[in-house]
Image (cartoon, rainbow, N blue to C red; front, side, top):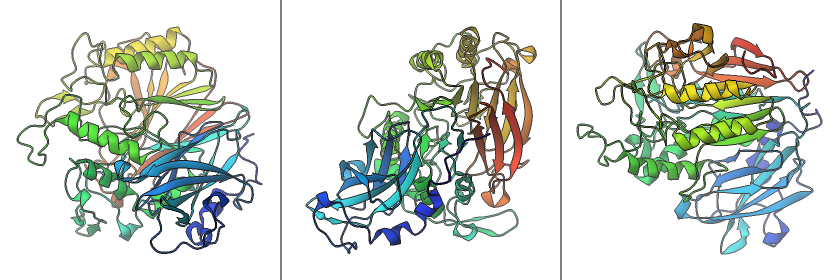
Length: 531
């Protein structure tokens, strides 16, 4: 029997309905002094909504963006009424962070629905505040018997397919919200900094796709302002803003936050006239800054040069989520056939961190959130060479190149008898389920495991990738178009769902279409090293 939150908790959607209009009459915090109950013109506005991220049993990060300098203030409550609330003084939001900021909420009760509202106060006159913006999230449970549900996907506004008002914008977020998940794992490509958005595009049937457009999305992103504008673009979608206010996130990044298939040290070819800045390291630093400003991440804050994207987010006794960064520490893309490769796709330090944290984890399930697939061949033809972008290079024999690092990790999991590992990813713009089995593999020193692929959220869909036999994958399910770059109007937009039952500990994966239709289901049993 599943233990979802008790029915007396207010529903998240009821919290959000009419929140802006209703919140205008909410009394302001007494610490701000007496002030009119209704926001007036000239006061700070939070038109980009709110987000919560990296929620734990007793903490969470709340994000907001102001339209001008403002002091961020957060109030939390166990109810929508905010009759008994707790107040948090947040940062001063200014131009140095593009008027964004996050406030860490500590000392929260475990396993409870937390209602929050964000107020933006004039820094020169704290009595002048804008309308509160409300959101909600559930803290992670302290006990095992509370079931866990989360969703994952990736790839938003790719290949020129942006926010189309004719089809209702990013509709997939409404389908995901209806499942009321505990959190959403975004597996990368949150933006397409290298993908301009034009006003229209012609579809195969001759009809016209229309996009909302902005100046920053009219060209590839190079300046910090342009990267920031890419993140703001997605927040023009009302579906996404509603979802953000209802569902906390765990965010990772991949290549399109910077540039297609990028790697450290890359220099853009002179023939690519879209870019005047040719150093990918320079572009990546600007993208990382904007990324840290527009998402609430526990390990990466604006201006923090030592922060990192990879981290473990613990979700009670049932689940630890290991968020990887396969982009920042990788070696250069190449044919990937070298016989030694200590750097690989994770870098030596991240690999040791992952092994250490996996061995320390006492969670029933250990989800490895990978921004790229393991056994699917993802080529990189940006330099006109037969290079490899992900891990697998198409040679079904013994591990080579980046496969060596993955083989080391899989061997470690087997010999340390680490139970409950599941791999989730996106990136390839179709959905599939792969089972990896040593009896089918060239490298056999590992236990069987599953890898599930989902996405895109709103981007071009592509045919299924080829499989590499080194780790013995079998594609148990796949749904993908036969043509390349099928628009969201043509379907093939996907997300995945994971349910962990609080009584049995069973983990159920469902691969879903844009409207929520279930395409494939797989049930996994707890306490096993491999299955």
